Amino acid sequence: MADEQVNNVKNNVIPARNGGYLNPGGTLGNKGGTGRPPNELRALARQGLGPGIEFATTVATDNDREDKIRLDAVKLLKDIGIPSQVETVSVTVEADQVLTDLCCALAEVVLERGLPEDLIDDVMSRYSAKTDKKSAES
Image (tube, rainbow, N blue to C red):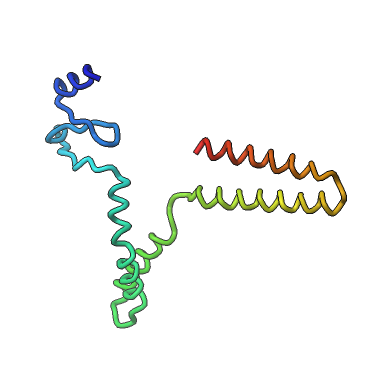
């Protein structure tokens, strides 16, 4: 730790909150920014998003506005409403729901056919073990 502090002073860098380093005054040819982590910027943007969406919706549906302005508002709403990145979280939630439904259906079949009820316990314990493993990896 002491060696790192000596190197920081020697190299004239400032440790950043995200684990990297900032050069005071920036780098030659690139003055740099505040070094603020992107998640903080996104949080600030989300705070103003609600009123912005309401305003964009009003503009997009206002027949008294120019078509270009209305079209720009529609494009903005599309960009907000249709993400360009894959949303893996919602897919995972849907997959977990499918597995839960499948386990319940399997339990019903076991009971209806008079099969040993310990089969239900086996299936549920295997399912729980897999979901616990996924939770631990996240």
